[in-house]
Image 1 (cartoon, rainbow, N blue to C red):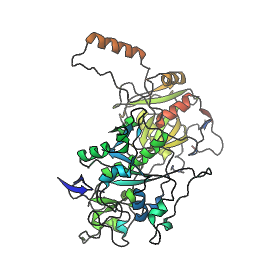
Image 2: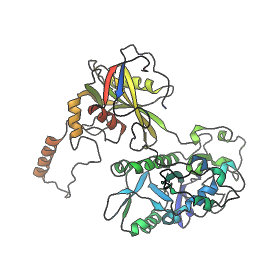
Image 3: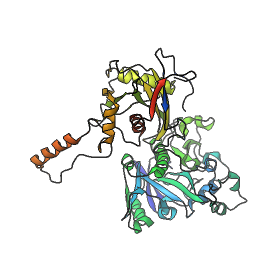
Image 4: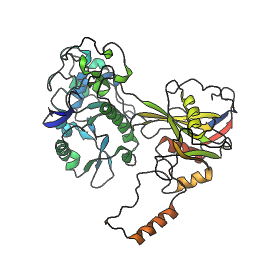
Length: 484
């Protein structure tokens, strides 16, 4: 069952009872095999060596201001503020009448109908009421209306080549006008807004009346993975943090400590248990989140290792095909880091479980945030002997795994269809296919297809494969002081 709440003129649907609003430094265990050292000639292994898609953190997150209702409520109303909208995890894209598609960035005036009455953060028991006093359970809390998250500030150049001044929390006090302080900022504040539970007609009305729509742009919610081929590097960094936070709140609606519904605090960056709200009926046994720091009330990121296995002579790589993947698609091996494991341990375990091969050595490449739904991909080059038999019958996750030469991989990368993308098979307009035409197209496609298809170039596996294939990775004997 659902209840309906008025949200500034729009109907907002809430589930009944819900107030909705490293790597390890340890070395791996001893490996009784020759050790090798991988050297990245073009990309350093530091975080600044390679900026991945979804990475780069383009916003100053101003984390110290997430608990400041004065700042948040003032910055929402800033003419410079922009909103990134999501529905069921799909970002809103804007396609102008003449131009390319991009992440839609709506103004507060555009989305005002969706936000509900002020205050927008540190709300009280009823919509339109402000939280009373300094209550930690209501720090920048949003207990009414669609979930909103303050993502950060895109700082503009100040005219002297430097970034704009980051505002300290002390400036937002009762002695100062918060709106005047916000006006000093030289940049674009960003928020995300999840409209999944808002009445569809209201969302359509808001989008239709937005400035972008009035200027002729087409606004539509698009699958997040499909958007990877559309949005640029800067937008990908905003999308990454926004979608991760939106998904986190959408998936975690109940307190893991006591089972009560949760709401958001800290401008969307923390969950609170509704049993601890000042107006909630107190139970004999308080929720355990009342006294301790609990990781399940904060956004979580799941670490994954992406493993490109290289032969000791640096001439071949091992690629695998998951049973559930599209036909002829191969990629690097991968796996989640399990409890009690370092990344190095996970690499060794995954190689053995998925392909039955032993790890000889490895080298870290870089990491990439991955917002589907909330992962960080740690890329590694692993060394293994191609003479060892490959077996996929241990955990049966892979349907096939095989070694490819550099020439084979380069041929695939050079092919127009070599990298996996949102490409679809031909769609026939009529209900009855012209069989002869269909067979001709299938034959032509088969003749033109690459030997296999690999991951997209903006995914970690695609970067690892491309760097290796184009000679940006070399192999030499392990030197003193190197870590496995």
